[in-house]
Length: 455
Image (cartoon, rainbow, N blue to C red; front, side):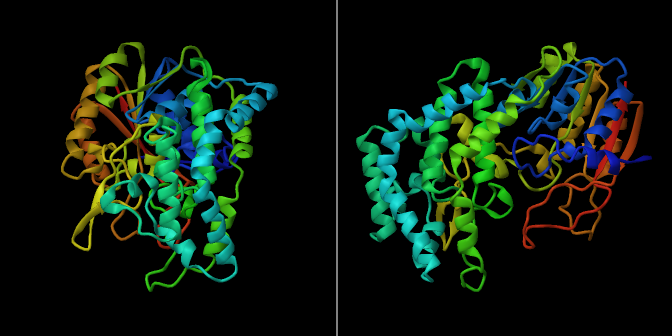
């Protein structure tokens, strides 16, 4: 096993572009990953980037190789497409895009429909500042409009309930209920964003969807980045809405400050900044592309055009799709069923409004993961592709999330298909973590292992 210390490279890469806050982002490891890929494939040919996530690896290597990024989720395809082939929008074009979102007729109608909730949310925060937290707590603990509309789970006749019912009535009257123009507002308004922020995210996605194909992904990706900056949760993630009370039932200290800070952010102003960031990104080399596809199908269809594969599948019991379900729904702009959980002996919609059809990776399931890894090694070897695989280590008792498959198991599986397998540790870096003592686990200096499989 070899070991490489990348502390200096990490410092140099600290300002690398990140399209969203991403729990397992590989920005800190790109130098090590690039070196490993060049080692197993010196040809400099096309890279098949499996489980691409936000595209940090593909974007970093795209300046040297052509890249095909692969992920089963649409939000990943959008982000990868945008970082590989960003639209170089001028300041005038950016101004026009933002103006279209702010002033089009549909935006005005949506804002009118949501006005009762906009007013109520503003009053909740004002009263909380004065010391009365009751209405704000009710708002933060309340389900989204998509749930309120179900008779079984309709809100009671409170100030919030009356505002929600009036907003739903208005949306139906304008033909905007279950419309793609109000997906974010109906599913995530009040829950992850303020209602005005949710409405403006809907407006931005509408403009992106009506734009030409050349810049659609860039505009959508900028909206996703904006959402990840706006979101009113611990750690700026989408796995769990903010909890206004602690375990004893008391309102958490600093709640009002956090709510004010996040929910007062200007959606359109942030969006301008994100568009400007994308406009300054360099395009990847050649005909790089982003596709939405299962990893095995992608290997079968794209291996003949590639000379090396990189894989970074999930390793823990956590289904990462829970962290990005909001972004997925923003890209699909559909009306997904919400998962249900047991509460007080009754099945109720999940508080996080998770998609019922969200992707469940076999790599996250202990009983299925070994076969998934074996299928990965088998597929890349059968298509004569060398492979670099990322793995984040875990040791019993170290406080990090347990891996469903150990490193020794993975090495054994790799050896069943590749004669030459080398293990390289990357020192001096740690994975990103949620910013809460309740959610954060310990980290270690050796945060990544790269498995190099030579053909």
